[in-house]
Image: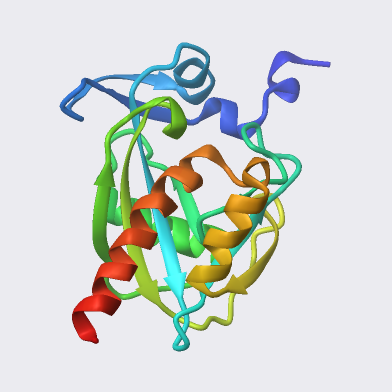
Length: 184
């Protein structure tokens, strides 16, 4: 078997390597970025329906990181040379089959750390009830949950959730609580 036949397409993805200020300083293959814990970039999109429920995806068992764990509605790395907003639009289409005319709303940012896999992350939010067409190589399934249910399930079984999602949800849940308190 030839070498290229054994290499997955994700191994051949190029990412921007960034410095501690999230400024590109070079490029490297995905596998090298992850193996060497290099700083890089990602997006997470939290999709809420009209009832305020959050769509969570269960990652495919074929994923190279966190297979079978629950995660954001949609997430992914920025390709080399790509900015955050176009990546969010692209990932929505690739993972959920959801086409949007404009990038979703930027909500908050997370600094690169061990929990994110050394990714600087912009967290977006979007209101949509679908329908979604889940990409089978990316997503095994999904579920709509109230924010309270998400928090309770993470507390009960944190090992079922991606580390980056646990971190971002701890921030998102506080943001949502603050919004509810302000509107009351």
